Image (cartoon, rainbow, N blue to C red):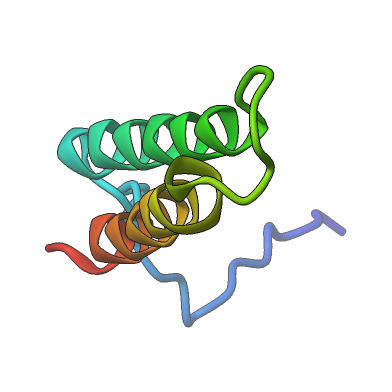
Length: 76
């Protein structure tokens, strides 16, 4: 007896399309850079630990970076 090759009747064409576009990846890299800049600002150099840059500016930059990252993910 010859063996027959069995194929699945429900074969689907798999579209190997990426989830994100090149623009999404570029925006995500920019968002990571903004977050890193915020942490660098938070680290700072010598000086008062309670100055404007460390307590207000740097956390706002980090939050903006995270928000920009969410925008980069959701952008079509």
